[in-house]
Image (cartoon, rainbow, N blue to C red; front, side):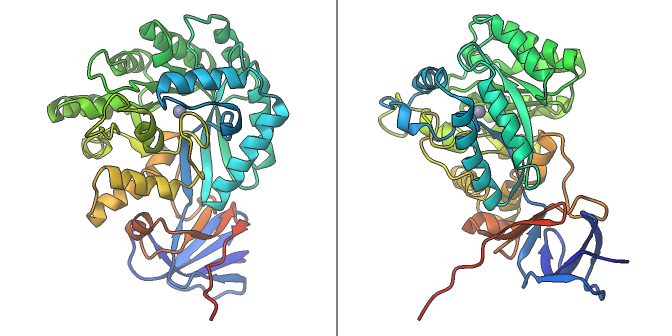
Length: 406
Ligand SMILES: [Zn+2]
């Protein structure tokens, strides 16, 4: 069999020993302790070969806008207000340039797929959507980008947004996103988003329960619509920070429902830590959804970046391994098995969250990223840097190890 590329001496997650992975025609053709055919070879030198990182929740359209906003409170209402004002002035070229910078950083950090939200409403018009579609096309050789047409500012309060979302779904958006915390009628909002998802046959993704008030959760309305529409396994929820305020028994009860409906919870620790708990002077809460508890009950869970350099998160480098490490730190993880779970939350579990297959198996696309680590838990503990990456067997980046000079 002819092979285009062989990566030798690789460590694979969950397997002992070292492996050679052979690529032909953009897919993984052979996995064996050694492969004795002529082909281009890369020596992994005992480093961890993965199927890449998967960013399941990011906002490319509003990344990199710190130069045009003011942050004085560091609260969610301020972030929404400042960003809403800024986006009225976004142009297609401006959004493209800022989004492209983040996508390039994500690729260089080992990300092979992402789901980005794009705000579509009377302020943003379709300009951000047009820009992100162009970014998706320009970087398709290196990363798969899903576009979620997103109602950040609500629906019942801005009815014209609904048909704008429909227009985007008819014109290349991959799924629809709702935001319950900006809509005065969250239950009606959820129903309208599900109606759009059904009308266009797409999945739904919500920003929800993004505060630390244990009461008045919107998650039950999302679960009810998931059941009513038969959308099991097709709905994700970002933030859901209210869960961090619930007693363990209440979290466990919700985890059973999440597992039954396969509604996912995505923690966005950089944003959750920055925006929440502003009313506290001491013992500031972490306010990150208790993913480990949910995951142990079979609920889908993942960790993602959310925002980069804007009023929601005035930090960021689109490095998902760093985000897994941040989550592990916040969740106080120490055992290898728990660090492996954090790794899964930015790889295999994140892929499942956005309806994507994942793994280094025969016949799978040769989306491969080599990390300077000996195992998944080691990679998370040390925020291991990626060394090289391939998409469908084609090399997309190289980041040689740093070298000390004497
Ligand atoms: Zn978000």
